Image (cartoon, rainbow, N blue to C red; front, top):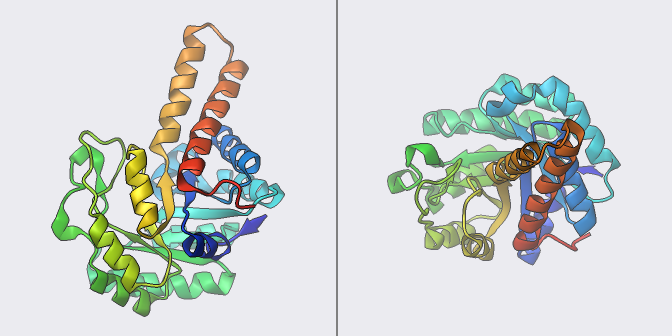
Length: 278
């Protein structure tokens, strides 16, 4: 069933678990994620991001994701992750996405507030939800996940939510996108203070590569949505490499890739505590 973020994150926030967002670039990954969610009876957030569109154009992949969400027997959010432009966010809404993230974190604070509020106004008219971001979630390849003077503060979070009306907020506490070169140092105490000061569900980006304890600590201290992509890519690539080395044909390799993605998703769902919720 297709729902928006409010359809899954409010329960997660209330009961102390997190729902995974798993970005997909093709129907193999899509199949793996949906299969995992249905087998574990877990809510799930499916999506793609603006930076991934060269690998799966929005107008091509959107119909598949939305159709899969509607057919599913568990709640599925179709979310446009890290929308960097107003135009792409609008395109996602028109294509039927039930949620969008407008990422204006690279802009000035004033511009981020203004643009995010406008996206919220329009998305809500579609019946869709909006995730915003404040602070700087780094790029692991650049080693800039621990630039602490760009972390989110509780005061900034409160103001951002009040001004924009976002339904969920991505916060910067030391994670980074991509594969980590060194162990990330998460500011859990800061996360706890943000959670205490705010009311909307909090989001953790840059989840691939964190330890199980890192995930447990972030969920325990208020994170209700966790984004995963790199771990799925690694699982799928390893499965394809192994199948190719064993001389298997394309269809067999595709099946093993899908199963590897499914297993990676199921591991995260159990870790986040979302399994068995539906």
